[in-house]
Image 1: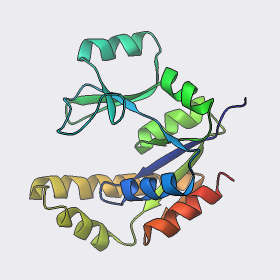
Image 2: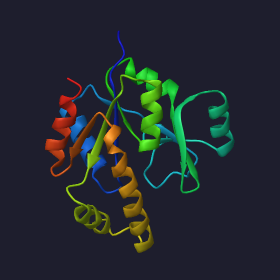
Image 3: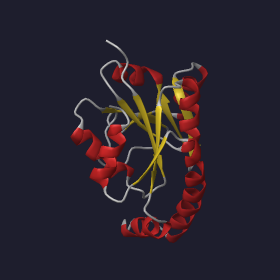
Length: 181
């Protein structure tokens, strides 16, 4: 069996990647989602191997040293990375979606040139801010920081293979799926 296509999704916090991903998974049962390793503690209801692989900082360093990660980065005092082994296992069964930031996306494209990179844009910055505020779980400081980071992330979209606007999650999901037909 051949390898499934690798689809990399990026977009600012609050753009609706999770909602779009859920729609994509409903529309294509053969898709699977890559699971990242992280050094952060599990949140309530998060399951090992489903949401993340939770590892110690020492184990994460070993994974880097042993070239077990496709890409990795640090955010908010925690490390995140894509384990090669689970990615290869999932690709042997079909297309795999990787939800990572632009830094990781560039590394993936360098290592797997046929990966399809898709950047998801909000309809506007005002809409993005409204979505972040609508969560009601984010401090003003975090909203400000996320909006600043969003500007940098959106500047990176020029080197992605495709850019889509998430003004409707189902339509957006369908558009992204059309890139991997």
